[in-house]
Amino acid sequence: MVVGALGLATSYLVAGLLRVRESPAVAVAEGVIDLTPGPIAKWAIETFQDNDKTVLLIGMFVILTGVFAALGRVARTRWWYSVGGYIALGVVAFIAVWAKPGFTGVEVVPVLVGFVTWLIGLAVMAEWLRRWELVEASDDEATDPTHSRRGFFLAAGAVGGIALASGLLGKLAGNQRGAVEKDRRLLRVDQATKPVVPRGVKVEVDGVSPWQTSAEDFYLIDTAILKPAIRLKDWELRIHGMVERDLTLTYDDLVAREITEDWITLNCVSNPVGGSLVGNAWWSGVRLAGILAEAKPLEGANAVLQTSEDGWTCGTPLAALMDDRSAMLAVYMNGEPLTVEHGFPVRTIVPGLYGYVSACKWVVDMEVTSFDDIEAYWTGKGWSEEGPVKIASRIEVPDSGADVPVGTLVCAGTAWKQHTGIAGVEVSLDGGAWTPATIGRVPSDDTWVQWRAELEVGEGDHDLRVRAIGKDGDVQTGVERDVLPDGATGWHEIDFSAS
Image (cartoon, rainbow, N blue to C red; front, side):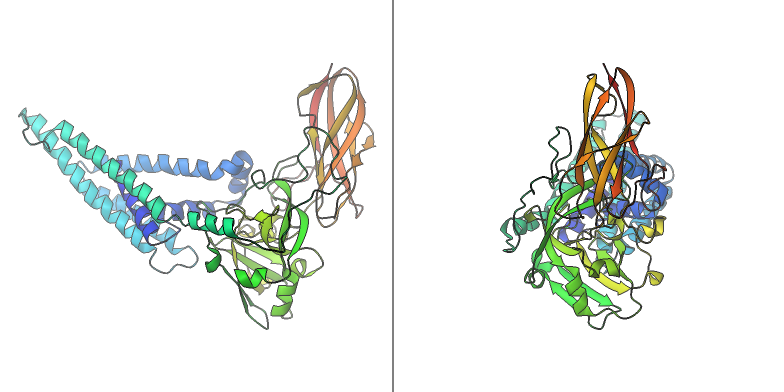
């Protein structure tokens, strides 16, 4: 097991020294994510949410520990079986790094170093163990420290220490995050402003989600085990494909353009009814409509295949990027440069579309194309090709299962249908008539709204449900549908007791 850890650590160290983001272990983990069927990916997001990658890494660690232990045990009698096992692990790692976008060949070096480390480490440790066992079998007292139980465990401890040191050095060697954070601290986009929450958007009920969501509280959904750390000087966006003119923009090119700012709510297609994968922020960036107009899409183009630095892709309707909505290449969030987790230095924001077809973090490539010619990451796992946001609402006050006083109940929550807007919200107590709620004033149709209502409740158990009405007349349906393939539907419902 310590030899196995040493091989992983040395490969990680070499990857760091070579500035390879996808060390073999990271590449394999992201490969597992890429190969996970859509329904299982959906279950993992719903079950573990922000902890899904941590669970994956723990699972990989447990499996690898068992594999390394098995290889060590079988090496006692059939060493070639262990070599075959290490070859199999090396092949898996090679395929994982080879399959990553932008493969150049240098990514294979960490795989080879880890493989050679396994073979040499196993041979050395097996020899120390053999000497100890020979001495014990003959009842001779060992004079050479390598011929003893203590010597073997000292060697094992030394190998483990080298593995730990290699891992730490690999983290330091490959840590571009520090330089990126320095870029963030020094970055100034003069046109970007601090957010001022508009008057009237809040319903002033304790327990309702803040109308402005902080970067720390904003939901995070992506497939990257190790978030891309991109220096400002290294970022470029290439726009190509079915266009008259290819464009390549540097960060300075981008922020020299006119900056647009807007309050925009984003939500994930994997958000269940009443779920928390939604947030609202003040985004600053450059509108895509003007940039794409410069590229001049050709007739027949109806999609843009966006690609992230880590290889993730999404197919976005071209019309949604070029109409009157604030579809942008965002550089600031809530008046501050994007965090690395939220896509620094540049990400895409498109109001009215679920993130899986629009919100590309760490965006570096946009290919103008046709939906008939592409398959993006999530559409390849069973999600629909286009993902317009569905109307939704949730109850946040009171909590489900709460005990409340008999009398007037104040209930409240949020509702959203980006780029259409919310015209009204209604609540129903115990399956009775729908009662209109009061909704906050919002600056545009691209944000969520807060709502509140007052109901008279008697003693006993109750249930409360909510539905929203869009400005287009769309009334939120009570038909329950799963998030797959294009977003959940149904009324959010809670139960509570009054006494």
